[in-house]
Every structure is written in C-alpha cells, then in structure tokens.
Length: 478
Image 1 (cartoon, rainbow, N blue to C red):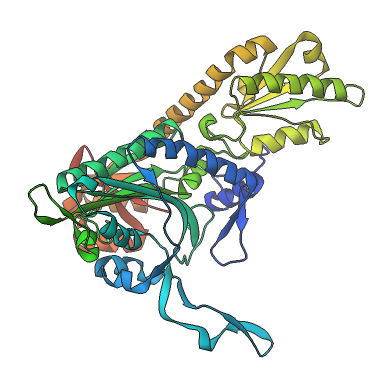
Image 2 (image 1 turned 90 degrees about the horizontal axis):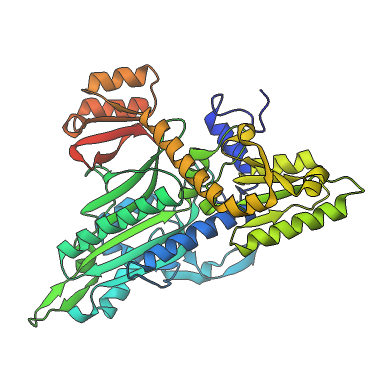
C-alpha cells in the first residue's frame, strides 16, 4: 500500500523520522552544525506545549525570570562534579570583537577576554550565584524560579528535536530550608511532568529515579520520565533533580533561621525540552505523516472546501462561516481556501497531523452536511453528519481522539516491557532482536558482565522501577 512517508517505520525507522519532519514542515537543519531551524508549524506546536506547561508550573508557586546566556567560567569551577558532567559539551566565548585579517573577519587577537564565558548548557551556577544574594532569611524561602530559554550543548550526533547543539527548554530552580522540603519538591515536579505528558501529549511515562551511575552531575537524586518509542527505544523526556546542598555550599546560598543561626539551603532543578516534541512525533505518527494529540495541535480542525470553478466562492464562504462557528466555541480551526487541488490539500493536512479533517462539497453545502475524518483512525472513521451535529459534538470528538491516542500507546507499551530473570536472559533477548524495555534486578547490572552488554548492544539503565526500586529498566535509547 502506498504511503506518504517512505521508507516506512518498519523499513527504516530512523530515516522515516527524518522524512516525517520534512513532510510535516516542522524543522530543518540549520547552517550552524548540530543546530536546527524550527519552522512556523513546528514552533506553533512548541508554543502550545510551552504555554500549557507554563500554567501548570505557575500553579506550583513558581515565578518566571530570565538569566544571562553567558556564564563566567569560574562559576563552573566552583562545582567540580557539575562541570565535569558538561565539560565535553561546553561552547566557549573567548573574544569580544572581530577584525578584518587577510581579507576575512576573524576574532581580533587584541580582543581576547580576560576570562572566557560558557554559553549556558544549564543554569544551576549562575542562578545559584543570584540566589546567594536574594536569599537572606528563612522568610525568603522557599524561592521558586523558572526560565524559558535556549541552551547550548555541543552535540556530535545531532538529530532534529532529539539531540541538537542548541535546543529550547524550561529550567526550574527552587531553594528550600530543609532537605525534606527539597526532595518533596523534586518529586512533586516529577509528577507534574508525568501528569502533563499523560494529559496533554497523550503519552504514558515510565517514571523512576536514575541509578547512581546515570544521575545528573552534582545531584543527590535524579527523577526521570522515560518514553518508549515505536521502535522500542527509550527517550528521556524530562528530569527533576534533588541537588542536596552541593550548589548551596558552592555558591553560598545561606539563610538566617528563626533561631538566629546561619544555615545552608537545599536546592532542586527540573526541566523539559523540545525533545518532548520528538517524543510526540515518534510516539504517535504513522507512515502517512504526523499524528497530533488535539491538546497540542495548532489546528484541531481543518475545513477543506471541495470546489469547482463555478462553486468556489459559495463553498469558500460557507466553509468560512463554519470556521467562525468553531472559533466561537474555542476550537482551533483553519479553513483552507487555497487554490491547491483538493486531494493535495487533504494530503498536506494528513501529513501535518491535524486531528479532524472536514470536507465540504457542493452536495454537502446544499444539504447542510459535512464529511469528517479522524487523523488517528483514517478512512475507517470517515462519516457524514449535519453541520449542527458536528458543531455540537466537535469538542467531544476531539476529547475522544485525545483519550484513544493515549490508550493506543498504553496498549503498545505493554507489548514492549519485558521482565528478565538474569543477564543471560537479557543477552538472549537482545541477541534475538527483541525490542523495548527490559526490567531486571538492579544489583545484576553493577558488574563487568553488564558493562560488556552495554557496550555490545548499546543499552543503558533508564531508571529504577518506582514501584519496586530493587528493579531497573534497561533499554537502547535516543
């Protein structure tokens, strides 16, 4: 059967994904190595994701702020474990001026910075320095801050939305009087992410704590959300970190307690990135293109007038009127009145993943009907209904799509989570090409034999099982 995207997922999942991004007009590789240009349709998806998550973050008592892009290198030197985790990915600014030399612009040798700056890979250090000035008393606590910014981590093997040198994210940084409060907050933000991904992205997360070998550099505890892609690989969709007092001690974040004693505070950090978009695209899409959950679709409904030269004006006007009705009930809608051929319009919006496609021809207009197709189900869902019935039921239809997309991923994930008794069983499964997550006793993964399996099969420990932390999930990952 002919598909819009070739090769198909089963033929070459990696190439399918790259072609999916192009077909849906989401992004392209930028002239800067390892970076991407996010196109308007891709950015519209990110804006919806960002704005809906931002509301949930603010409900947790967090305030948005903005911190500098450039971080003094000495800030990183104050937290040795943290800098070791990012040293190989750091992009460094060493000069402040260009000069024409031998006919080309080059860094001016006389404009070398006394101290280099690191383009932020993350902001624990510079925010920690600010908190050391802003926190003075227990009355200043808790302090909860967040910023929506771009970051830079030099990526050797870039892939659009999954791993790029520059990407967009939110990073939250909170400070507390006690470790109990800090750890509870790290856990809370972990749950906020899980709820958001389930309710908005229609993706169930495997949630748990990272093992000591995998946790964030400088953290006491890292809590992660792992998603299972259609090819069985893991994608880390977000993390929340209990940073203990590491950064508080390195940057002097202290407060005067009610007893008059000066004490070091406890901090957390937590973040999700544009990688979530890659997770949505890989999790839900099919061989005809993007499939978007209605909650984050820039257009939840596209109306396509099926016109002839003699009916174009009337049909377009009729479709515009229906579009206005949907806008009035807060449905995101596009009426495609372009002069593109009707089949080409349909394929355009199929590839872009619009949840509901509504077609109106001359006969439908005369009978006050509309023909509607769900993107997630395709031709089998095609139905003709009255305009009034469609307007009355469209929100329920969108809610049903959101629900069904989530359930479909849950069912698929159940087939890709495997319990293995020991390393021999794990190796056998991997050798036989079994895909997905493998649940195994954690203490079986702390030896050289498991290290050899990691090297041979490119697997890693994803997280401990939140329901029984003596078990760990192991998988190949993006």
